[in-house]
Image (cartoon, rainbow, N blue to C red; front, side):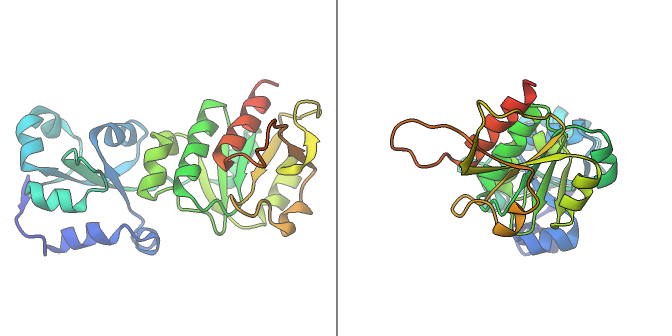
Length: 255
């Protein structure tokens, strides 16, 4: 085990830089914080390259750290690790891993329902959607340009590890041609559409969820087979995007 003494160490500087989406993409790395998330990543065969533990964490969890099947493990001062943490109460362990890679054609070939996120800006919404996607048997989550990065720390934590188990692929609008070729029915969710309670739904489908504030992109609507809406009571004009996505995915899972 190696020790890092200074906050100016190049590895520490690199860790800090990974809060930027551009750097994560360039380095092909993401930040994993906490034992539970690290365990989920390792169980899901994420390639974890480095682990960093604070002095206090190592003293209290020595056997766990020593058993980790990771080549590079670094011991650092509590204060340095706390400065890297995104949590109000840092646990004392974090790691770096490579995002999982998925082949879009292989995923679609399985024929499972898929979710398409259209400019979902809030990383917590994006993470919650992939968590629901796993719960309701969705085969893949596609993220169109303009979506929050699911390897953002907030999204990753909101996904509760589901990101490591549900295929997640960044795509362009060309994904709709691929879905059409595979004979997917493509549903969009909007306030003005067929009532989801009475619509005849097809399980071999893609569900498109639009931007939190502006809904579906007008250039996407031309690709849709049908627009669905969720009936609501009271004065509520719309649902949270992650909540709405969960309702539709649940309905599809019951077919």
